[in-house]
Image (cartoon, rainbow, N blue to C red):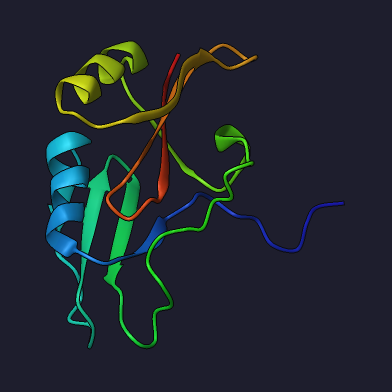
Length: 133
């Protein structure tokens, strides 16, 4: 029996942020995404593209909810909400993030199925995983 709905792919992930320019610097200058045109919504935001993946940012406002994600201190970083991006080489990404002064909050470590993964926060404490095979 087939499911009544067949998802093809994730089109985008939307994050609420406090500072669009700080987020632009992270997603474009650090992660190498390309800023792409965004429809003329009634609220500020930015869109970024990497291959078929898009990140949509919304500037925090009365109707958006708060920026960032609450992560209790006792949670395991790799077992909570996050967005994961495949990169060419997670170990080189680790070195580059260190060079840029961006804190690595977990990893690099090997995932049981093979990839190397590490975790960082974006400017609004959204958890970002970078991994490579």
